[in-house]
Amino acid sequence: MTQSEVASRFTRVQVWVHWSLALLVGGCLLTAAILSLGPLSTAVGHRDVVGRVHVVAGLLLPLPIVLGLFSATFREDIERLNRFRPADWQWLRSRDRRSGRIPVEKYNAGQKLNSAFTVGTILVMLGTGVIMRYLEGWPVFLRTGATWVHDWLAFFVLVVVIGHIWMARRWGQGGEQVRESEVG
Amino acid sequence: MSDHRIVNDRGTPVGRRVVLGMLALGALGVAFGDRLAAAQERLTAGLQLRDPTGLSQLIPAGTGFRYYSVTGPVPRVADDAYRLSVFGLVSNAREFSLDDLAELPQTNLVRDFQCVTGWRVNDVEWSGVLLGDVLDVVVPDRGATALRLGSFDGAYSESLTLEQARRADVLIATSMLGAAVTHDHGGPVRLYVAPMYGYKSLKWLGRIEVTDVVDPGYWEERGYDIDAWIGSSNGRDDDPV
Image 1 (cartoon, rainbow over the protein chains, first blue to last red):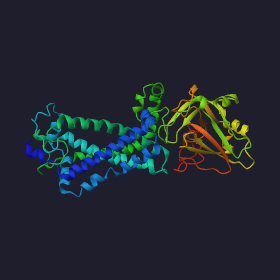
Image 2 (cartoon, rainbow over the protein chains, first blue to last red):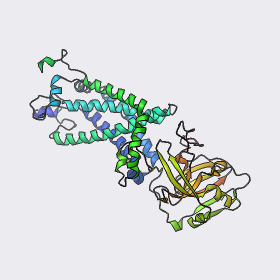
Image 3 (cartoon, one colour):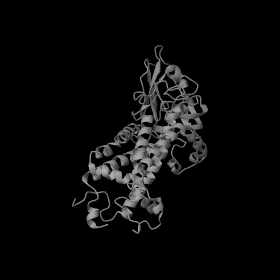
Image 4 (tube, chains in turn yellow, brown):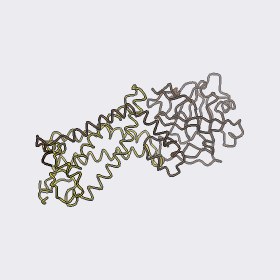
C-alpha cells in the first residue's frame, strides 16, 4: 500500500463516525463495569446516576452510523465491508495473511467481520437493553433472557474491543489508524 | 479457488448475514436465556460464594451478593460511635447503641436475599433484633401507621407500614453471613426485610421515624413498588421468601 493510498483511506465522516461510536461504546463499557463488577461498584457507588449514563450512551449507539449514512463515501465503505469475495475467505484461512501474498482491498476480512459484529452488537444490545429498561410489562422469563444475553454479549464485546485496539496498535502503524487524511 | 468463484463479482453479503445471525441468536437467547441462566447459576454458585478475589464476578450473571449503593463512598461508623435514632409519633423516642441493641431479645433467621434485578443469595444467616421489638421499646402512638427509615449518611430512604414492620421476619440485623455486618454490606447495622425485594433491606441504618403516612423511599420514587413482596410485585414471579 503506497503512502497516498494510506493517506486517503478515510474522510472526515468516517473518522467522526468511528470516534463518536468509540466514545459511546467506551462509555457503555465503563458504566457497565461500574454497575456489575463488585470492587468497582463498591468504589464508585452512585448506582442511579451511573445507570442513567449507561442507558443514554446505549440509546445513542446507532446515531453515528445513521448520521454517517447521509455520506456517499460512508455508504460505499459499508458496501465494501459487507461483501466477501473468495480472496477474503482465503485470507482468513491463511497463516501468512499479513505477508501480502493474498491481496487485500481497502478492508481485510477481519475488519469486515469486526464491522458486522459491531452492527449486530449495537442492535442486540439496544433490543435487550430496551426490554430490560422499558418493557416492564413483558413476562419475566423474557426479561431474564434479555438480561442474560445483554450480560454475555457485553463480556464478548469487552474481549473484541480489547482485541480491536491491540490489532490497531500492532498492525496499524503509519496512518492506518482511523484518522483524517492530511492530503484528502 | 477458481471453481469457487461467485457469479456476481460484488461478492457475497457476509456482513449482512453476520448481523442477521446475531439478531437470530439474540432472539433465541431472550426466549431461552432464563433456563440457560438458571443452569449456569447452578454451575457457578459454589465457586462465586467461595471466591475471595472477586474475579469470578467477571462471569456474567452469576450469584452472590453484589454491592448496590446509590451514593458515593459511605462514611464508616465505629461500633462504639454507632447510634440508631428512633423518633416521631412515639411516646419514648430514644437512641440505641450497639450495646443497647445487644441487650434486646436476639432473633436468628436463615433466609434468602432476593434482589429485584434478579440475583438471589440462598440461605443467608441473619441475626439481630426484630424491628417490632424495638418498636415495643419506643411505643408508637395510637395514630401511627408507618415508618420512614434512613441511612446514616442521609442518601437512602425506605418505607414500611407499621403492620409490615411488626412481622416476625423483619429484622434490624447486626450480623449476617455468620459475622458482624461488614461496612460494604451496610454495617454496623442494616435492615433485613425477608419477604420483600432487597431495596427494602436498607443498608447503614441510622434513623427510624414513626409517622402516620407512607412516604415512598428512594427507589420507590423512581418507579419501584412500595409494597415490594417477593414474587408478587415489580412484575416479577420469583419464589417468595
